[in-house]
Length: 238
Image 1 (tube, rainbow, N blue to C red):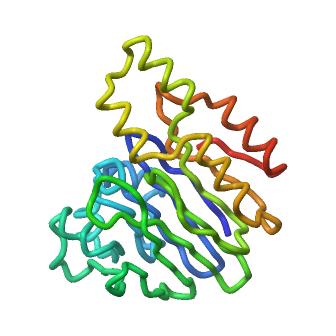
Image 2: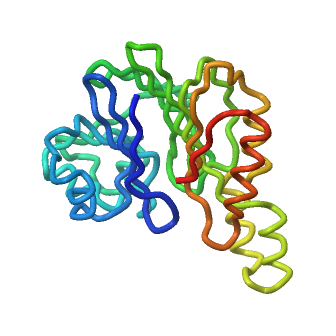
């Protein structure tokens, strides 16, 4: 499983995941032209795009992606907010009344959407498994994850802020209380990430990709050091 970071952060998110016979984009939160350039104009290699929620930094190019003939997978609520519900290339993940999502097969990949905790309609994240026993957990823009996932080999996880840095910025009037509370209620902190890592079996984990760091409320060096200390795994800050 090959993972390429095309963009990460509040200005835009887009990631390429390639297996032996399937290539996905996770998010399309930069312009379609930027995506084309980063993929060296080989858009025909993309089998589908998975979108977690409707915010622009995750779904900016969705209408152009659909227009170009790429199937885009998302929740019903996300499609509704993006106004693409009726497009023939929009694919809706189905779920039961308790928002337990039904597994989806995209080519030879097994995709399991899981609920996120974010201020949009039906935000989701993804577990993606291939036929070579690789399992990717993609976890972003959520205050926390209530799930335990066994057998993770690749982890892409948001670490948006460090609590002490955010609190200092509030004290120094670099951020107001409303924005501070929105960050806390919608994004994962270093402390939350560490709690998640400790709660899950990481014995098969090969690499951790840390995504969506805040420009002002995070500490890249601290985040990398602490996650490496906890896991003993290779950590890439996206």
